[in-house]
Image 1 (cartoon, rainbow, N blue to C red):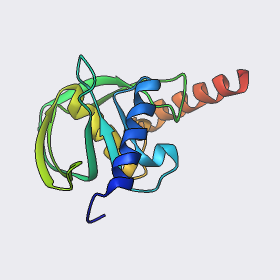
Image 2 (cartoon, helix red, strand yellow):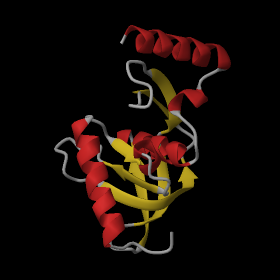
Image 3 (tube, rainbow, N blue to C red):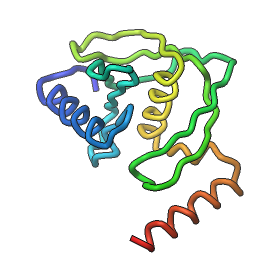
Length: 147
């Protein structure tokens, strides 16, 4: 995607509303069936400060890791503690269609990395060792079967 237009901005607005309704701190377009490299993240305490990103890419990741319990509406009812870089620098097209480089730290960094994983066809549990991943998937299957 080379530019941002009103259609993309409307999609971001829908994604923010969906993210807030979940509630969550991020959402990638493929999670709602839109196969574009778009994501929104709002890890602020007060909310209403979502960052809209097109084509986000990690330019730099800190060596220091941060553990955080992650979940996804794609696999309801289960979660896992994932270690990711504590801080990242991203490059992306913002809502004005301008290329931006921005640093994200803490929960913001975790969420943007989680969304980029979705854009790359990965889920948070792909970061787990095979045995832990199998246990999580079996637990999710049991929950789904009960519903």
